[in-house]
Image 1: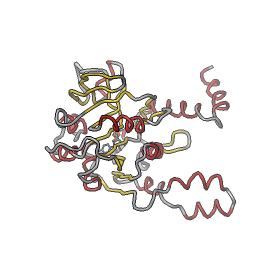
Image 2: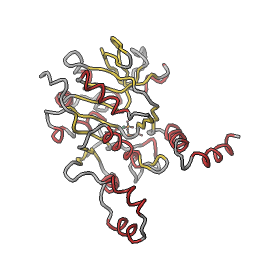
Image 3: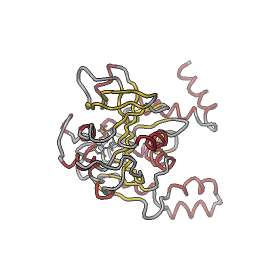
Image 4: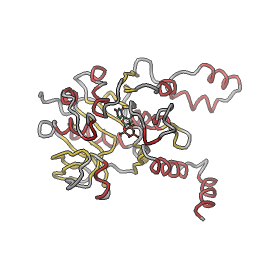
Length: 295
Ligand code: UTP
């Protein structure tokens, strides 16, 4: 495998949205999980805005059957715009205008069968090309932070290059739900990665769990070419990342912020509470409502 330029520019972001979202049935029977709103904004919009805030202009969505509302969300809606213009609702027009990607800077490809996150990322290989590092954002991992999580990672990437995964410390009993790193030397928030294990059943190498933010060198696609099935019979991104260890710089980054697992119901509900309480226009009224239930 060729050694890539450690500081290859990150100009593209992959949004894998091809999963079935079975933990959210029946809501996700006909609606993509990534379109579930936290307060009033779909999860996928938070992810797209995070990539934009990190300075990444090109968006690649790996979609699947039943996901066309995601494309519609980031498209021009003639009827809506016309109605809002006629009614002089300029504030709402201003709200939806930034949703339009620059023409030519958005691409959609389909993962016909959801064979795992690694497979979804692999589906974007031709659109990424072999010159650029790429960011991967999972919309159901929502991060509340003063500086958006991917922007923090890009700042670190400018210094160390290579591959970077965002991690957080989880309770020991939760390590079997995540990709877990085997940590090497730690320098502040930056941790050298010596090994990676997907959903360890026992003896996790640490409590540092990978969340859905990655900066990866293009060699990840060569690693994914093998299409090896791992945990849960899925093609796992963690397994492909593990093959890069020792060949390229590989770091974990303890991001500053709070992550909500919006792929499960409690995490999603908590995100709604936290984001609503963080909104000036809603916080006071919502706090009163919550008090009625928690009294
Ligand atoms: P999850 O691991 O949460 O899987 O995917 P899922 O299928 O969406 O949900 P459950 O477990 O059935 O409830 C994390 C992210 O990776 C994408 C999902 O769309 C989600 O954004 N993904 C997952 C794919 O794009 N393709 C896959 O094959 C699997």
